[in-house]
Image 1 (cartoon, rainbow, N blue to C red):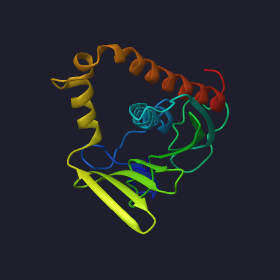
Image 2: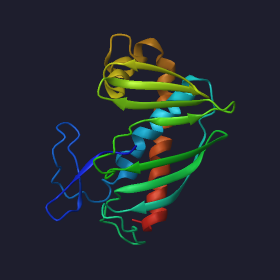
Image 3: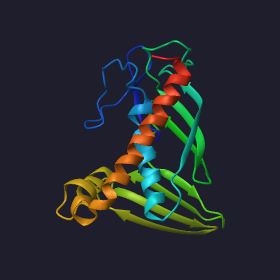
Length: 200
């Protein structure tokens, strides 16, 4: 998840407001950094994709990099500075996992999706574009692309939570598992914060 950002009058990176695209003037503090703010969304997207495919969603994570918005490492004991960038590494079932989170990816930022490398060499890429959510399947030189108008968040909320045929109606027995997966993800991310910053 590489979010586009702008610059303030001092030339420092500044996040953009999600809804308006304007410069976000808030000074973000821990725990509002990318690990908890964006990491929860990315893990949910990855694990639910794998769960829907019948895969193993067991999660293991370690923190490889955590930096503030200016690119400085987060120091042990720092319980106030929000992370602007982080690299998480681990496994999802038996699948190697790398998650790059960056709220300050510059004007060229904007990747909001995932890239899955299949054992047979094909690559599935899921990303956001102005026309909607785009899924690309690359098989050597052959590339197939599908676009679904709207955003994944809107579709997920409608299909899983708010819509007439939501998960609570369609498959009430699966709600507990869905909730348990979200709790596990938050526990992992909080554990990484404790390892990074020390107990707090």
